[in-house]
Image 1 (cartoon, helix red, strand yellow):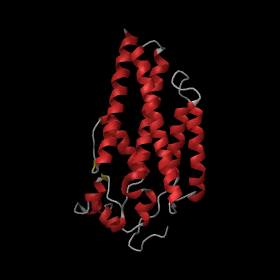
Image 2 (image 1 turned 135 degrees about the horizontal axis):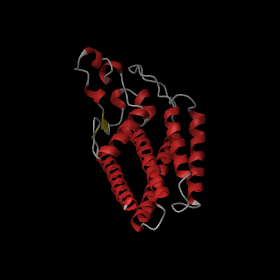
Image 3 (image 1 turned 120 degrees about the vertical axis):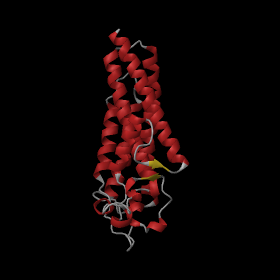
Image 4 (image 1 turned 90 degrees about the vertical axis):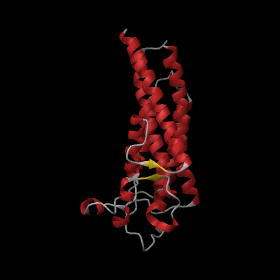
Length: 229
């Protein structure tokens, strides 16, 4: 996809998102057998198969996109998210039952929580303003409406050194690291911090992530207290 002459931001690096995908799949792979059996290999296998064509199309920077690659990329993010939500339900069941060894179960909760942070970051990254390729290639007035408002989107009237990094001055756009950071903060604070959801789907997704994080934290604390007792 040719970059519009009005844009000056370089295409986003491919590897931060790929590292996130591999980390999420690795965390999913090494969950205890009590949580998952054969389905873990199905999910990981499909995930790796989806990664291969995406890497071939954009091995270094995200500057090319087809309808198929867009569907594959969205499908990969949603696969990891949905699979982890199912695992979360199984984890909640085990935590509530309290019949399994405590330390391995608490470690599983950490793995599910970390995978949740990465999975939601990937979905946010894929959905916002038409995705990572569109955000740097298309003219601003051709982008899809934003799902999230970042601080840089409104810093053009700030002091000079802050204004220099704003969307209006530097043609700044969020990258995967930005979505990973606010996914992490949302999962810990259970609410928006510096990045605000604008669309209904963004609010629902952030609400689901905050709810999942809260449930894991509450049940893990309760389980840890019972072990101490």
